[in-house]
Amino acid sequence: MKSGDFQAVYRELYPSLSRYVTRFTGDADTAADIVQDSFLRLLEHDLPRDEIRPWIFVVATNLARDRVRKRERRRRLLAANQEKGGAADSPHEDLERTERIASVRRALGHLSERDRQLLLMREEGFRYSEIAEAVGVKSTSVGALIARALKRFSAAYVAAGETDAPPE
Image (cartoon, rainbow, N blue to C red; front, side):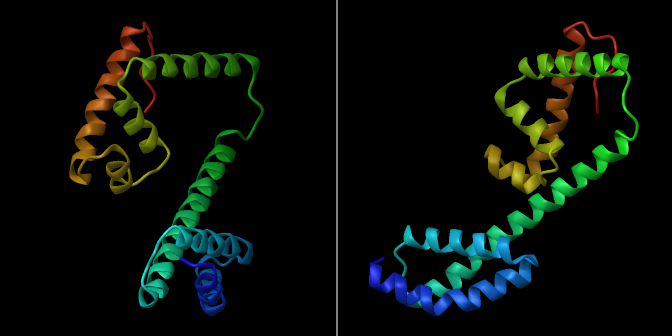
């Protein structure tokens, strides 16, 4: 896109896009970042003038959804961690946790890259459709792939000599 064209499009679309994203996210600072990212992505595309407005609003919506999801996921994780960690752990509990983390990492190290990715994305709260896109499979296959990955993880965990059941 030519510099002059971009400036004209920017002046025309920025106010409405900014209002839209601010209302969508509920946060003016986040909205400003998303709008900026949207216009940066526009620079990478050569679109006909009449397609720019719908395209940039779709891009901004997708970016805003991603931010909202990340914020919600972070909030849930923080809340879960606060529930778990009410009182300070004893040195014995710290040592057990450190050993368990090392055991899980060893077991994960024995898995294929795809199995690791499936399990870690599942643990981070990704939806099956997001996992499917990242791994390059159909979303209807993700459940079965995760189940198989969990079986392989359990076997690797036990094979590494761990006596406790693997974590869920």
